[in-house]
Length: 130
Image 1 (tube, rainbow, N blue to C red):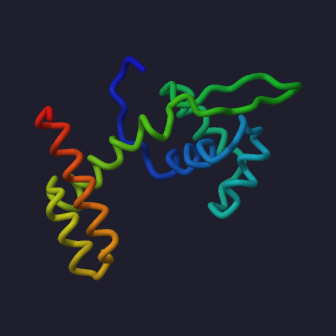
Image 2 (cartoon, rainbow, N blue to C red):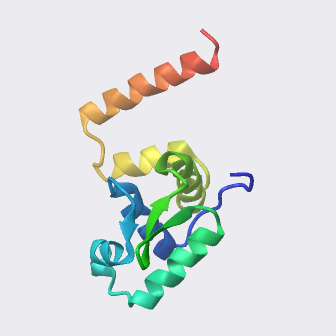
């Protein structure tokens, strides 16, 4: 992907999540079934797929009279974009504010805190070149 990856609108992200969860490319009917909870018309799904294809995030391959859709943009490639966006929008760009919010709502167990501490220690070690 030559263009920088931008945060997806919520509806497009829902389509991408359905494609990422699939073991293989999906037909439109399979996508409609996976996204049934959204209550979208078939034309809405086709519009979203067309937008994602235009961005280079989804590709379609002909199969019979229809197509199978697959994600070109991986979840791993996209996750940092969404993380930076949420951190900026919700926590003024501060990772400390994120952790503080989780701690203040009793969202962190002792095991979570230990896991974070170990991860941060490994991260610090990598950054210091040790």
